[in-house]
Amino acid sequence: MHIENPFLSVIQTQFVPQNNPPLPNQQRKEIGDQAIWTLSSAKTGNGVDQLRDDNLNTFWQSDGTQPHNITIQFLKKMRVQEVAVYLDFKQDESYTPNKLSIRAGTNIQDMKEVLYIELKEPYGWFVFQLKTKLLNGQEKPYVSTINIQVVVLQNQHSGKDTHIRQVRIFGPREKQNQGLSFPDFKMPEITQYASIR
Image (cartoon, rainbow, N blue to C red):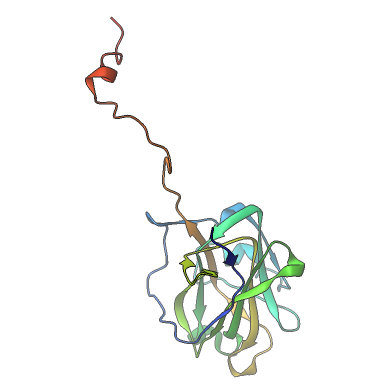
C-alpha cells in the first residue's frame, strides 16, 4: 500500500524557458477546459478569456493588492501533472511575476503549496512539473486534486499588478483498456464468427 503526501512542497529556482508552446501529446492532455477559472482581480478586458485564448499578445492583468491568484477548479478530482505559463519580461517589465507559488487542495480552505518558483526576468513558456511524493520515497508524476492555484507572490522590480499571458494545465493521458486483457480477435476460434452467411 502506498501512502501519499501530495502537499510536500518543492522549491525550485532554475527553470529553462521553452520557445515552442507546450502541446498535448501521447503522454499528456490539456485539461484546462474542464475547469472553472477565477481570478483574484482583473482589469476590464484583461481576464480569463485573454489568459486562455492562445494569443501571446493578450494577457491577464490584475487590479488589486498582492498576492494575485488564478484559481482553477475542477468538478471532480483530477490528475494534474504540469502547469505551463507564458511570461514576457521584455514587454511587461515590472508587471512580470518574480515569485510564484503553485498550490493544490480539495477546497480553497485547504490549499497547500506544492511548488515554489523564483524567476529572473522570464521570457517564454515555463512548464512546471507537479509530483506527488510517496512516504516510501517514490514519486508519482502528478498530483490528484480538485483545485489548482497559481499565486503571484511578487513581481519583477517590486511591481504592483501582474501580467500573465497564457496558462495551460496538463494531465496524464490515460492508457486505453488499462488493466483489461482482451482476447486476440485474430484467432480462428473468434474470426469464424466475424461474418454472417
